[in-house]
Image 1 (cartoon, one colour):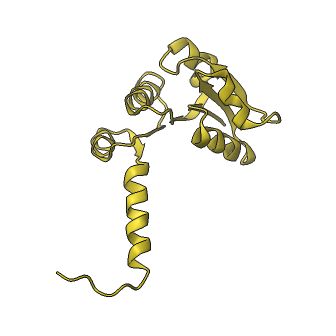
Image 2: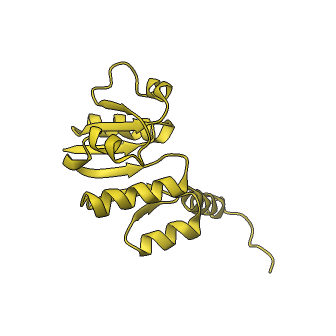
Length: 140
């Protein structure tokens, strides 16, 4: 099964390596050729240099055969738009966008785009960690 990832930073490269170990074929897109060093020399997937907003780049990455698409560039707008392109233009049912802004993440999730919001998720995890410390009750 083929997965396309846009963004080869720490998150994208780590996800690509994880998916490959699970038997997925992965193509990863990034504007910077230097970003691909994060994958390591033995990465068996494909590297595509270019902008994921470019339909030619998406096709070069094999989006037509993909079962999933992950947008984890450093831009919320880019991630949302390319996840929508993957979902609507290419019919990919599992299109996921990393969105830092919690309000926008919720809005696009309601519109049918799967979103992961690190800002919200970390806030919840930190809150749960503080609550688990067995601190004295807060004064009201």
